[in-house]
Length: 137
Image (tube, rainbow, N blue to C red; front, side, top):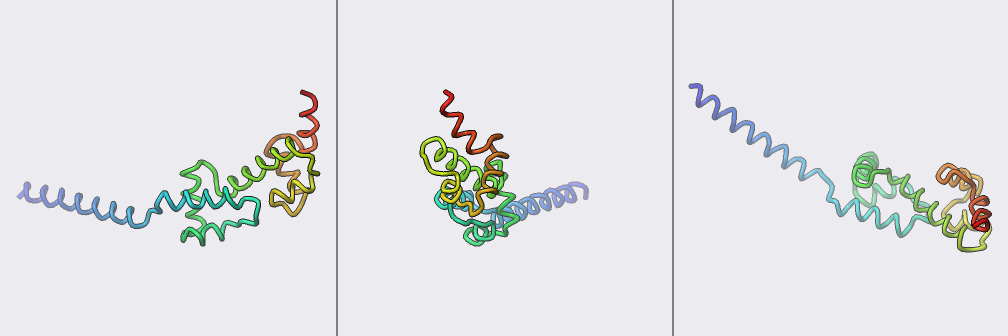
């Protein structure tokens, strides 16, 4: 009968929805996992961190890690590492008399030229100009 057919169809949709929800709950990473990755980056951003290491420590595929990190924080893990390094660099530039080479090394950069290029891309000016501009105010 039509009523039995409709009842069977509704039961199918309910079971299917439950299976999908269960599958999602089993496969979704806990927010705590992403928070742990963030905490690790905050603690170690001056060190050599790569995406594979972050993926290994979180037991996630690196592409999936990037996707959920970006969904949760709005930027990729690598972009976050760079921002942390460059914010620290700016603090050192403005508050110390360390050389640009020393600052680059302190922020995890082995190549000062690459550091300067990334700093300029991020802040729109060079580290030296940033330092010189603080004396203008």
